Image (cartoon, rainbow over all chains, first blue to last red; front, side, top):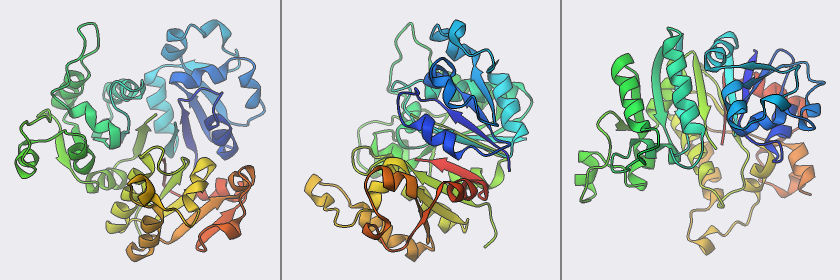
Length: 96
Length: 130
Length: 120
């Protein structure tokens, strides 16, 4: 079962760490709302080793002025892409 | 594919209600079915018609109502959560002897069975909370 | 039991926020509709499992009475994340007897074997 995890919390809390240790190979992670800060240094190092694909919601990164700080290895996406990711997996698990 | 959405946070308290709306719109734009949007816990405040949005703010309630009208998605407020927070339809206002009907007509008050039904009958259930 | 399995993950401490109660109510509703339901306690959610909670002191309903009623509704699969216990200086023996401790690998597996995971 491949799961799309969504995370909307800033990496300064405990939610990112809890989410990361529950990711399994084949899962993917979408960072949205305050979760986009996790795609910036230094926080991004926490999951650069992860076998899972990580995405960040473009609109939330732009709103927060961090598009220039996003790690280039993380793919940006939009809500259309969010729906596609949700359809491509077996279930969606939201962390907040 | 059938999508359902679970909304746990109120419109003002965080961005997650707006993310839910944007996701719901993207679901229907992609040609999928939006089976049900279930508002639970603080999320029921999305259905409070007595709340007046600021002039320069998105009118979220109208946006949800329009989505429901255009695409036939069920908008359900958990009845226990709603009544506790003063979001009452006519029946509940009368039952609890309250002076106002506050639930927007586009939203139906119903039990958690509707969320369980959405879990059973949807292909994907996506949660938005804070 | 057939049906789509549901795992409810409790990540928050009791009483400070009311979201956990919403999770318990959903567990009971899912069980009433004969869907297999399991509960996992992790992060601050492990605090829900302490005995001797006198919630009447803060004019609220005790989590303990809710947990005690779960088996009556056939909600019997309760799990706790060991890493969260360790981080809080808690030992499984201090918790309610019917909770099964899981290591990280087992937590991952538990999530993956359920159709849907909802976090409270």
